[in-house]
Image (cartoon, rainbow, N blue to C red):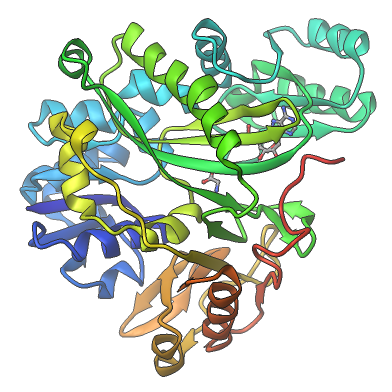
Amino acid sequence: MKIAVIGSGGREHAICWALAKSPLVSQIICIPGNGGTAHEDKCININPVDCEYAEGLQGIDAVVQTAVFEKADIAVIGPEDPLVAGISDQLWSCGIPVVGPKTKGAALEGSKDLSKIFMKKHGVACAKSETFTNAEEAHTYIDKVGAPIVIKADGLAAGKGVVVAADVKTAHEAVESFMNDKTLGDAGSVVVIEEYLQGVEISILAAVSVTDESASSGKACIKPFVSARDHKRLLDGAKGPNTGGMGAVAPVSDVTDIDLELFNKNILEPTLNGMIAENMDYRGFIFFGLMLTKDGPKLLEYNVRLGDPETQAVLPLMDFDFAAMCRAVIDGSLRDFEFTWKKGFVCAPVAVSGGYPQSYKKGYEISIDNETVSKEGAKIFIAGAVDDEGKLKTSGGRVLCASSFGSTFEQAWASSYKALGAVQFTDMFFRKDIGLPGAAESGNL
Ligand code: AMP
Ligand code: GLY
């Protein structure tokens, strides 16, 4: 099988690495890929801008053309933007099966309003909310319900669309900024104002195979992976600004069997039933962003893709063939596909460019002492770095992560940090507490 993987981050590097291990996979083309996928087994990077056959095409049109011309047998989509823009619909109509939902399913992430409508209609446990298209009405509502309160821009905003407001002044400012000042463009024209939930956060990633056919034969399913946790704040102790993710662990030790049972009953099953009821053709991944509250897990958001950096912590725990699982997602046999997980833990701290998430410099050479990394049994997943004539150079905020397995969490933690210690680049910065007590986002103001 020749597989096209779409994207250029650490998640996509981990996906390529997991696919490469499968005997079913002959070649992986990563479009456009990064400095890690460039050197991954069986993998080559193809950037549509370098391809004559994609000349004059932009965005997802160029990517689709590349997958078609390169004769990909299936495609796996990493990020949400191409999914929301309809890349799966296009690839399927060109005869390429896709792991990644079509636009109707992708709207579960593309619009917070549509996603809340779906949750409420199908009885998914979530925060109470109201949607506003008019700023005056939003201000009046905030004054009526008070703080703490959460203001969310409806559209995709690359992690900048949520303000957890401790006081009404902050909430009013967020409404002004999103709706009147248009700081997020059209993404903030509509806002969802949501009840503030207290608890600790976790991420549950899952594979989904829902089609008309699988629904009528009782085979539609959502199969969860082991639990994971991202650490979004920049600094130790969950302090500092929000980032795209400073490190992940899996599975999460403080998640109980009761939490998982309640998650299945109150979130996963209603989501599956909702997808079936709405005739979604959803074959891909879903990511449940959860708050573990005193009343049980509540859904903060759906993402219609795998998480980054959660994927870099979850995939190394798989004791099954990831490519075979992708095929089962597509052909509707996922329900009978057995997930087995390594018994142990993964810790995956992320190293970022100094200055991130604000401004930072790019182009620094990265040195990696591979002997130490392999002695630790660790894997370096590359995110914001490119291959520049054989040299790995920084090209983004989140540069890489060191993902390490251990039979105890303490072993995984120590090993991942030793591996990260074997990496160097100018102004490199990382959190030292990924997975330790007090490191998790707690939803406390
Ligand atoms: P989202 O993009 O919806 O996951 O929101 C981003 C972050 O905002 C989450 O990871 C939480 O830390 C926080 N958040 C979102 N919704 C709520 C809520 N209802 N209560 C408390 N915190 C929230
Ligand atoms: N780790 C959070 C995300 O992928 O959105």
